[in-house]
Image (cartoon, rainbow, N blue to C red):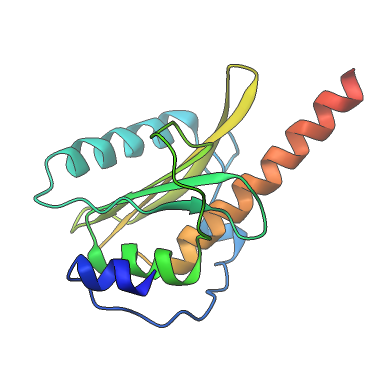
Length: 163
């Protein structure tokens, strides 16, 4: 991992695991703390802003201790490096595919935002996590991934109970 970062010209951060932020800092869309409309609006702002960014960093890997794919899309080289070194585990090289968890991280002067939404696509749960702010924190990315995994497990248990 560190060699990949060095080749990309990005400073190599500590590889120490990052603890997740409190769940209250990462609300789920559709709850009293975060409406679907507010989440969808923030997601669109993040996507539009990232699309027009000068540089994008897109690390991919497995969520820690799982085989669930995670893609992080960010305009912050420091955050991308932190994700590579302290959150994601290597996954086998393969053709690009959609990942179950996609995290959009926008480093910008826009209003700070963090939240996630779980949806169903093709009979599988998928998650979109949005984090925006002047200096997005890695612990929010960790929280978004962990909360998404927990939601996936809850969805699977509910589907099994219905069967």
